[in-house]
Every structure is written in structure tokens, then in C-alpha cells.
Image (cartoon, rainbow, N blue to C red; front, side, top):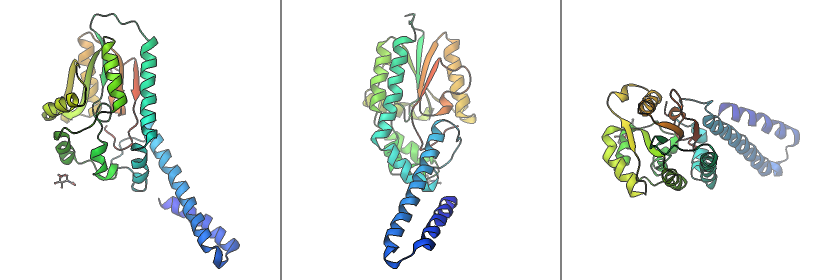
Length: 257
Ligand SMILES: *[C@@H]1O[C@H](CO)[C@@H](O)[C@H](O)[C@H]1NC(C)=O
């Protein structure tokens, strides 16, 4: 933020020194505001894109000056369009990637939060990524079982299931939230998955990324072929074994390592 203000002040003082007339004051200050707004928007968009491509990792909060921008994006039709595009690519991949053996061992993995269910209603009332993650209040919200479905993922979920793939949900939610999670998923239209992995006590001692790759290892050990993963966190894809393809949904509100 300091940099942006400093930069804009230099522009501003150049304009100011060059041509100051009292009547121009409001025009100048308007121009100053526009330039400041433009460079802030660019900064926040770069921040967001670099989160998505996994250059920025492990952030605890969205930079304060970008909270409004991230909120605008995550509640916009652009966020919806970006998610839909990612899921269209899944369909394209599935239409020509593979012949399924039909032996019940073809598998697909989904994350839960901000992949199948949206936490945006929670973040709308909790600072939209601008406040440090509060597990107590987040879990209290999850227990209310009111998380809405991400509609495009709901459609894809059933398309994948109808193709004969076994669906596994691997979530960083804790095991204590199992019944709430199942109820919430069913309530908004998800059903027919083959497994739901949640974090038990011992899993909480390790990083989510390691817990998730261990869950995939168990599937591979049971003979499943993992054709793909849809998730909103890079920690859902990293480590071994991976999947033949991974599809990232946008999420610049929080980062789970
Ligand atoms: C987290 O949320 C709980 C429940 O709403 C609240 O009591 C607590 O003070 C919060 N903790 C922090 C660090 O904000």
C-alpha cells in the first residue's frame, strides 16, 4: 500500500506543480483518485492471479487494501464464469480422455468447501478473507448446514457419476463435522458418492496436503484409478499419488497448506 500511495503522490505532485490553478483542484483530485484506484485495482488483480497460479502461498489474510476487490470478484459473475470454464474443461477432458473399464475402479475426487459447497455466505459476514481464519466460528457456521451448492459443480458431479466413475470426497473438514457435512451435501442435491474422507485427530497433526495425498494413496492401494481432481486449493493436488488431471477452481479468500 505504501508503494502505491508513494507512486501516486509522485504523479500527483508532478501534475500539481505543472499546472496548478485553483479551479482545477477538483479535476485534479478526481484524477488522483482515478489513478490511485487504477493502480490499486491492478495490484489486487495481480495478487489474485498469483494466488490462483500458486506463486503466492500460505497467506493468512487477504491484503487489507484488496479485501474489497476480492469480495467484488468472489461475488461477481466473473467468478461464476471462471468456475464454469474450469468445469467445462473437465467435461471436455472426460469426453475424450479415456475408456473406462467399467470394473468399478475408475475414480474422481472432489474437495468439499468452495468446490461442492460455497463458504461465501460465511465470509460475507466475516471480513471476506481480511480476518485471520477462525476455526471456531467457521465450524459453528458449518454445523448450521446452510452452505449452498456451487451449481456448476453440482451438475458436473452428477454427470461424472452417471458416467460410471466412483466419486470420492476428500475434505479438510474435521471428522467431528461428518453428520453435518453429509446432511448439508444431501440437502443441496449431492448424493451417491463412494467415500467421504474427513480429518481425524491424527490427521490434524499433519499438513492438509499430506493428509490428502495419504487419502489418495489409500484409494490407489485399493486399486482405484484416479482420473481427476476438482478442488479450490493447491494442497488438494500436490504430493503423491496425484491424478491424471487436476482442475483448479478460483478461491482467493483463504489458503490451506
Ligand atoms: C473466533 O470465533 C469465536 C466464536 O465466534 C469467538 O468467540 C472468538 O473470539 C474468535 N476468535 C478470534 C481470535 O477472533
